[in-house]
Length: 207
Image (cartoon, rainbow, N blue to C red; front, side):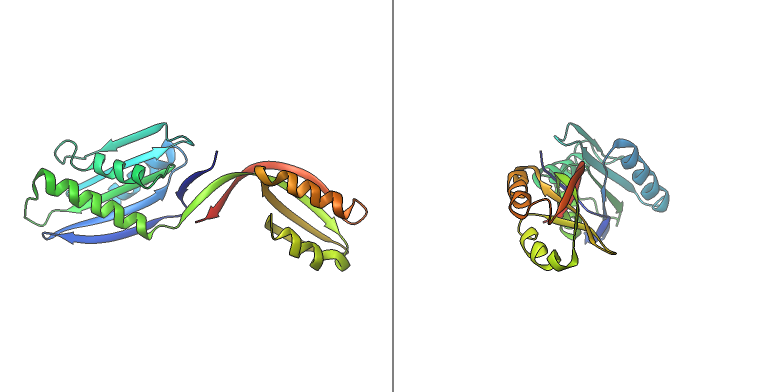
C-alpha cells in the first residue's frame, strides 16, 4: 500500500518570545536510524535547553514515539507527533531543538510553539509517495527506441538507459498498471522488444 514520507533532511528555524526553535526533519525507515539522528542532533546541540522529538515508522505507522526531553509532559513530543500524523506521514522523524530565551510560554504556548516549529520544518521537506513497483528490463534496436519511449512515458518510470549495440532500459510500473504494460508488450511483439521482469521494489515518487 502506498504511503507518504520525506525524501531527505530538511530544517527550519523560528523565534518565539526570544526562544529559538530549530526543526530537524529526517526520513527514518526504522527505529535504529531514528535513534542515530536523535543522537547526532543532541550531540551537535548539546548546549540547547531541549531536544524534543517524535517519529512515526512503518507502512501503517505502527511505531510511534514522542519525547518531551524535559519540557512539561505532553507539551512538546506529542504536538510534534500529531503534526507528523496530521500530514499523513510515516517513516518520518522530527526533532525540535529549543534554546530558551528567558520568557516562559506556559503549557498552551509550548504546544503551539512546538506544533508551529514542526509544521514549518515539514513545509521545507520534499515529500514523496513510496509505491510498490514492478521492474522490467527491456532490449530493442535503436530504430524503435524513440517510438517506444514516447508510449512508455505514459505508464512507466525510467531508471536506467544503456546504449550499446542495442538500447537496454530499466523501467518500473505501478502494480495497477501492469495490465497496460502487458498489452503494450503484446502490441509490439517479442521480435521488437525483448523484456523480462527483474524485481519488485519500492519507488519514491515526488509529490
